[in-house]
Length: 615
Image: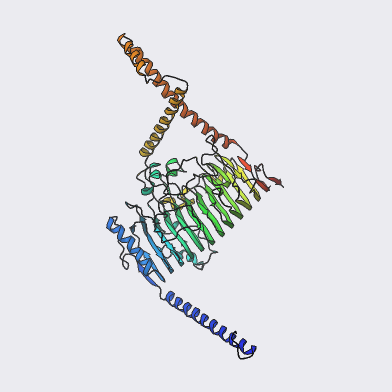
């Protein structure tokens, strides 16, 4: 039989209460003790100089020093980083990718000089024992990031004593006062984290074929919370610049730069620094403000599972302010406002990837955004327009291949673009958006019949050909203070760029020649290659003194073949150029489909064809 408690129910109740109070008291006591210990450790924070106290070696790029500095930095993060501050003097410290820290609490890092990373002879992958990117499972076999922090909290990455700028003029503003706005952060003495991307990008196109996406991110944080990044310049990341899976994050007063030339825009040579995203964000409770980004891919990209993010006063030039690409997850409560985009490829860009699964992007606001001279599309809401390449170690993909929307659409014949069959946009608002002097179409809005875009509002979304006086003759370096950093790329110079385009032209002509030969074969046209019987006839002709006639005839055939090849190249170029010109001259959105409840209000012009206008 079950045991019998010898006593009243009242006594049993009293005993249970005593046990509960004892457990609660023990837990509270431990929490208070742990809190007191943390406060004591914070109060006794240790400060380290990387050269003097840690053993770092400045201004030396030898193999031995690169390995030494990388190991020394990693060793410090593993053993001494918690409850401490690390200072880098105004010198250049050289590393290999692979600086790694874990389980760090309350760590501050201040950079007065430059941390520069170099490409090793062998790029090592992160071991399988370290789980990476659970929220983004497309990529297998990731290389070591330049700096990799995980499972940590309460971190600050900054330049020495930037807080003094908060007290200029006797303003009395507190260092942590988010109401203060430093409008001249570009004048501060900001430290630099330099990924030396040109060593990984290599010769344009050839370098990408060699490494593809197996290039390190500049700064990766995951499973981390309570982070402040400020007053820093992040330069020439080999791949993504700031890859941040962080809850409770602030990024401010910083610059991101990834370019290969000094050009005022994004040339073909610049764009070979591919996938150099500016700031890629997972997590929740994120505030990014007063940041300038000049790169060759997404300026800011909100990624899977992101929520409660605010971006304001962003200056960007790249592939715009992006949400995506999103897979089988939900993204919600995202706001971009009071920002300026200078000659972006795309301006506002929201996208889903792959046909598998069902994702959701909802409760999104873009407000007070100026887009100056967008090069392709001012606004893109729909499938990701990208190369279908998910395995960075796999073979190079065909550029026009895609599951949903081809990178070549609509310029290349037979390329396609369709809405996602299951993923959906809901409650999307664009308010006070001005697109000036676009080079392509106003944009693309593509949903699907099975998963339509539900509830989208364009309020004062205006496309105008004229550029207002305020945006004429802009001081680019003032808008993008990170551009004062010099370009350091031995693979790109006027001579080398000319050589690169010559090689591209040669390849195009060779390809066109093959097409011309195929056409000639189809129409049974002689191309100068003779059968044995024809060779015998030619020998007879030569003996008859008609050799000069044969040579002349052969030259004509070769000339016709070359001219035909050039004509094919020009025809393809004309077709693609015509497509671009037609989009530029087109006042309406290039595509608008798969939309339910689309509404245009205020001064919106042009009104997308699948929207209803309400005055």
